[in-house]
Amino acid sequence: MSITMTTYRALQKLDTNRNGLSVEELRKVDKNQDGTLSAAEAKTAGFAEGDRAQLNRRLSGKLPTATAFVFTHQEMNALKLMAPLHSHFDTIDADRNQLLSAAEMAAAAGDSRYPTEESAAMTAVFKNLSELQLLSNDTTWLPKLPANKYLDKIPLQTYDERGLSRQDMERFMDLAGKSDARVSRTIGAFSSAQYPSIALDAPIFAKGIDSIRPDHIQQGELGDCYFLAAVASLASTPQGKQQIYNMIKEVGQGMVTVHFPGQLPITLDKPTTGELSMYANSGRDGLWLSVLEKAYAKLRNDNPMILAKADPYAMIGSGGLLGTGVSAVTGKSGDTDILMLTSEQSLRLKLQQAVARNSVITAGSPAKYPWSKEDNTPNGLPKSHAYSVLDFDPKNDMVTVRNPWGSTEVVDDKGRPRDGVDDGTFKMPLKEFKATFSMICYGQ
Image 1 (cartoon, rainbow, N blue to C red):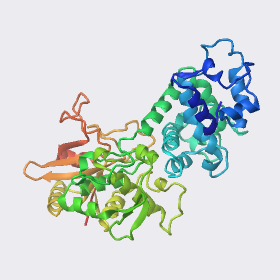
Image 2: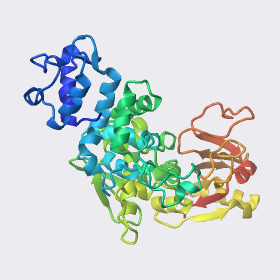
Image 3: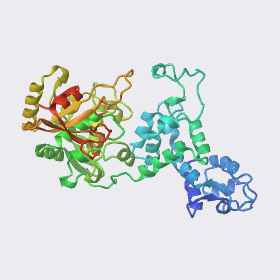
Image 4: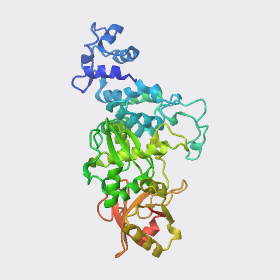
């Protein structure tokens, strides 16, 4: 069952010990102890009339046992999670197809009109949507083809896997009392989303310009590594730190203005709780990275030459070219080399020159193709991913590289990080760098 936020809040008030709603606690509402909530009793308790029938079905047969639970602790958490979606389903469902898609959930999580708790619920569902949308068998008249990574791309395959349905939500509640792992994972994500690593009231730069450091850049749910890798490279130099610091200005009332090089200033709301939980962040260093990413999404989505998306983050979150990210933070086109066609001597010289002039440098690992069985390069780096080049030491031919995930780096023959610390930053010989990466982009 799914209920509205109004009814959930009323139930929460009755659950005074926060260990689940017992029959004894619900007796306060059922004044005549007949095991049924009348319209008057429900109204007095603050329950929405539309939820009364569901509550009565739940209460049925349980009244004689005072210690019985109408809703266990896990079920109360599940109600809390699903109540905002039930209340706002029609609003979130922008295309009116009775399914909440990933794009619609992401847009809702980033909508500042929703309070923190509701935004966190939408964030948790967004993160676990791929398995939640499979909870119920609510397919359309069109039979589902056999599961296949190629067949699943056929446009006519319009079954419930496109988003979360009301039936999926009902099934979620049914499973909440049965120790289902999918429910537990989603409730765990809900709990985490309510307390993101960065507080909403955190300053933009918690430590002034010293807040801007590449080693604390953490990629979120979006596939915008090409942008974050460029930001981290920029943040690795004194000039780059100053540039980022000057780009972001608070203008009051929860608004900030961001000025990307070569672009008009963009004014926008600070990130919501949902956005802080889902997308890039810089931990205790403040909101600056989250603001920068949100502004970049808005910049791309506001381009009059491109059809805008309901969720601006969708415009930047499906991957991109190295040069696109470099251009975003420098205002100039990047110089991209295909390493297979570049000599080691040329690579060495260009790296040395680029580092000397404090250029933004990013590198891309080889593409991961559908028919490939390998997700990583032989030395352990994820394919189809962008990395920052932070430094090059010509004396020993070593390149310093960083993964914007803040983890997952080159490994030894036992699969362990070579430098002993899985923080995403690592060094590798130039020869190995050339063999590992497929492309490199230098800022001009």
